[in-house]
Image 1 (spheres, rainbow, N blue to C red):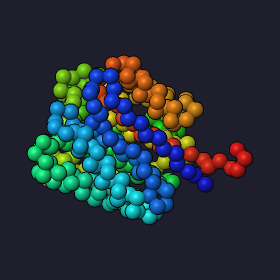
Image 2: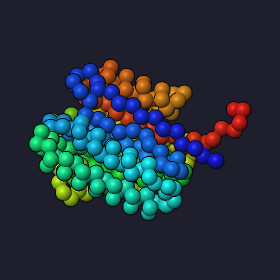
Image 3: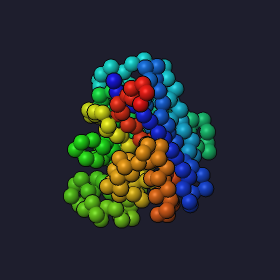
Image 4: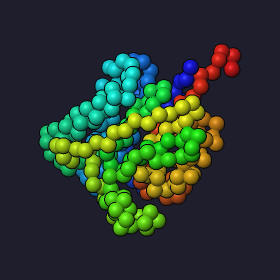
Length: 253
């Protein structure tokens, strides 16, 4: 039998005065995992409120859910709940003048025993580590990524582009929002990583993979990756969630 292990960690970093990231690892009634990372939009008012709202909304509804048995069921649930969270953020901003213009990225994943369903908006990312290596499984909704996709910019130049942080989509900024939702298979000893750009702007993909597979526990991986991002400047909030599809230990092991 396979079980899932999850670890979540967030850090303000060395420069920001407060943390606009949110998220967590949550269980439903069948002990399936929902992992969430949300990054409140920098430069907008109350980004921390927006990221907390989407996290709280998804968490609350996930606790009510029984077993998610199919990718179709997972995709429908995730799409609907992110849309509801988008409406909640918009309504909150209308009722609270100081929060007008707030927004957040979100990447959320339902982890069943043999598949992952991941939904996202913005540039917080999802990665999968399996027998084929380590691969980003989300597409950034950013201006720079669109320039790369259209062939106007190389991946190398994108890393240092002055408009790297400009988002094309975010949660809570429009009434209708396009959510990318996909399902992929996963197996024993695979890892899922969700993270904000405070991590990926400081740590290369090959380093992310190395720290995930070489540490003794996913909790240790989280700690060391945040420390690494902080050692390299820590200008942004840093947040990550790791879920491991792990073989269940027998009694006595």
